[in-house]
Amino acid sequence: MSTLKLGLLTAAAALSLAGGYAAAAENPTPVSLSPLHSGLCLEIENASSDYGAFARQATCTGATHQLVRFDEATGHLVMEHSGMCLEVSTRIISEGAPIWQAPCTEGAVLQVFQPSGPLIRGESVTIVTGAARCLDVEGGSFAEGARVVQITCDPNSPSQIWKVLAGQ
Image 1 (cartoon, one colour):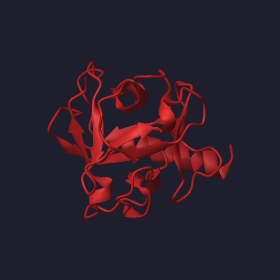
Image 2 (cartoon, helix red, strand yellow):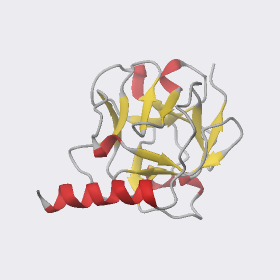
Image 3 (cartoon, one colour):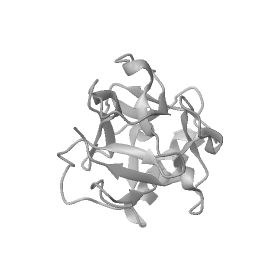
Image 4 (cartoon, rainbow, N blue to C red):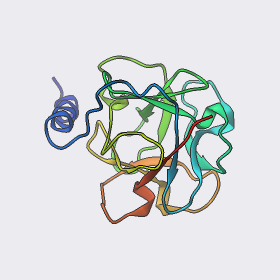
């Protein structure tokens, strides 16, 4: 097994063993996620249903391409409009790697996410990736269209804290 795959598997195991939130059941209600610093919402660009469409922040509308469900059993964040999963870009999995959508694959470490708490309206969470980094808005940008990336976790970074908003 390659060192990279072993490292990712180790990170995923660490998520499940050390401090990750485990919900009692799959989140049945889709929610919107809003980075605390900007008040915008995570969405898939252009409401695309295509593999590889990037996650970004934009004005919150409640449209289905801004709604996500957390599947506790798999660790997947599933986009409501496409049924695809958020994934750390397979082009680059290091610091600053973009998040995009891809067909859901059980056991795919790059599709494993661990919220720090329940995805319930009004809660604020950090979300750790299968590569043991956190979801962040690139550069802490306030701009519409700024991409969502993975970056080293910083508990003091408001661009890594996601407020859970009601879905539709």
